[in-house]
Length: 215
Image 1 (tube, rainbow, N blue to C red):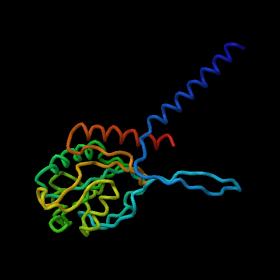
Image 2: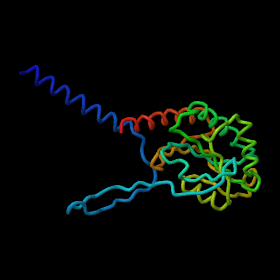
Image 3: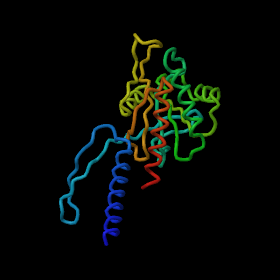
Image 4: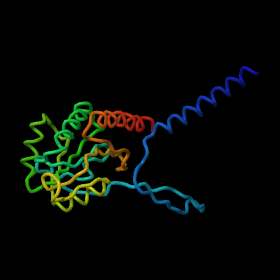
């Protein structure tokens, strides 16, 4: 009887620790959140509504529409750049290419790079740039469109993307990579100019993919 009780207690402790470990290993959901109170079966239920990336519609390197729906059922990494950027963009694209190579052909992963210089970075120019990086297929999308819409979209990812006469190239943008989950929640932000930042991103992408396998 004692051995059975001991085994039961051990199992309960193991399951408790496993549950705690699973919860602790989940990436946080970033951004504002709202508490919603509603009636369900005559009872008052409180739920949390987490911030989601709002809908968008731009044009990709193949002159095709790229929208929020393009990323349905995917986790993806977003960043902002421009091809003639003389400062951090080359470093960012070197690190994003590492991410691309690591997750190439993984059907659950996509990448999205928004140009903040749409006047120069037309679909044809973006296509040439993608080709120069060795990018094939549709896993890595490059988006262009109305400048003000792109700047507005930058704010939705909680990063800076704007004109700045004092910045090199006349444009200012964040060097962050933004990790977004399948529900369009922001799950992490990483320094896209360093190997360390990209390494942390890729590790967290594995963690996020693992979350979906346990659901």
